[in-house]
Image (cartoon, rainbow, N blue to C red):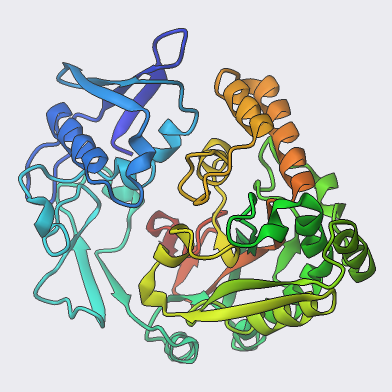
Length: 427
């Protein structure tokens, strides 16, 4: 939203030119300039934070003139423009020190945090930014974000008119409909097992693709979808998102629930007597799924052992190579971003740095292609990953929002909570 145009200006797609808006101010009135954009991007890249890899391909930044900058890349990065629309491109005021960003408003958005009215951990009050360039797209004079971590408290708040919209739990769908609330639904994350120890460092059995395939056959994703997510989703066996060039609907039939087939594959791989698979369980993430996984794997001879991990531990235990597999929800959004994070030998979500030559070759060809040729290569990559069973996806969950009578909300895929610009007053 801060850029009016962006394009690669060379034949190799390693020089990205961006034109920024000339009518934008930070919340304290400081004008947004090319230098401010470059300063923010440099700060983000140098932070070594969990998403700093979003700008890993960028070697240097150059101010061309008062409204234009160029990013010089070390190699083509098909996800760069997408990443600049996410946290990497959230431009912060260069006059605010990095250590103060958690407490001082430093953005360019349509609203400014009212520090006096805000009660941290309870309610965050935002008032209109008088200098925002597109106020018509944001019709509310004030926005209050209330912290309600308990689903029952959220439901009570919207039923009594204390809030206008909430994140909807699938288990509450019937109650929401019976209460006359509007239900907004859109495709969200895929949920399933990440079988990351593909070289068998901790669990030798996982080095055999037949074992990973057996796990896919052993898990009844449809049953988990029905019982845990109340059928609010779509079954899948692939990591790439529906509607993208990498997605092939036929692949979703690759692993029907078949415990007998799973046992056959385990026997072929030399694990007729099964093996132990140690995984983490997070106290804040769908605790009801873990016993189902344990039971279904036990039916084919795999002893799933879950070790409790506090949610406050973050991703450290699973991305540090402490476990061979884990249950997780993945917000697939852009094929190259997903491929490099999950499949590349250096990908942050490939913590054992498994390097598959065929995957590496396809990624190299994808980076140098575009259009239908690139889509075809992505489809080949997806088919290979499904065949090799690097993951055991269960389903793509539906994101739900329950909306009261005073606002309307437009659904947007991959938004666990609808974006602010998708809210309008009810007519």
